[in-house]
Length: 280
Image (cartoon, rainbow, N blue to C red; front, side, top):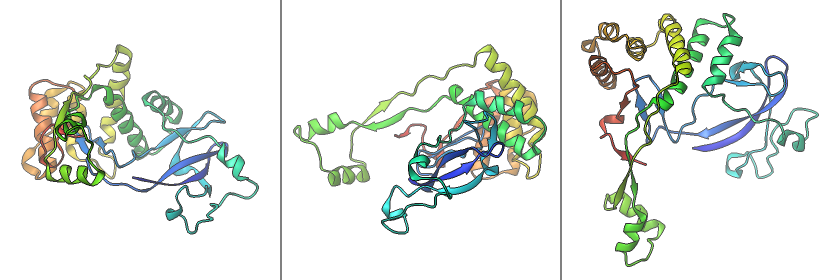
C-alpha cells in the first residue's frame, strides 16, 4: 500500500480547508471477511465516508467536498518530476498548506452523531452507507479474531548458531515454508455496554428497511442484521443457501449455523477457504 499526495479539500458547509490522505495503490492480500460484510485488509485503506470539519464542527461527506488543490508528492517516483510542487490553490503557501488540519475518520460515536445531524436530509443509499459503517465500527470490539502465526525470529536465530539470516535468506525460508512460527493469541472480544447496545440495536433496526434500497444489498445482509439483533428465527427464514454458490454460500452457511445456535456475535469468515489461523 503506497501513499499518494494529500488532496486539499473544502468543507461542504463552510469551505474550511483540510488535507485528505490518498493512496496510490492497495490490494486485498491477507484480507479477511466477516459475516457483517466488513473486509479487513492490511494493504487496503478503509473507505472513509465522512469527517468532522475542524472549523464549523459539522460532519460532511467526503464525496461532497470540493478538491481545490494537491500537496507535493512525498515520493519522487509518484511525482511527474523530481521538483513536483503539487498544485496548491492560488494564495495558499506550502507552509500554510502543511499545517492544514488532516482529515480523520470519526469513530462509531461520531457516526452516531452524524446520523443525528443529517437526519432525513440525505438519500436512502447514503443513509444506508452511514448505518452500515456504524454497524461495522461498533462490531469491532465484538469480533472474535482468529489466532495469528508469527515468525519466531528468536528460535530461527538460535537454530542458525545465533546468527541472523540475511534479508534474502529470510525471504527464501518464508517462501519455502521452512520457518518456525509461534502462535499469537488474539485479544478477547468485549461486549457492548448497555448504552452502546441500545445504539447498536437502534441502528440495525433502522438499517433493515434500507437494505433493499437500489442498488439492493445481498439478501444475507438482512439475515445477518436480524441475527445480530437476536431475531434468530427471522434470520433463518431469510436465508436460502440453495440459491448461492462460492464464497456467498460459505457466508450464508456460517450465518445459518450461528443463528441456529442462538449466537448474535459477528462471525469470522476464513478468506479463500484458508484455515482459521493465518499469517500475521
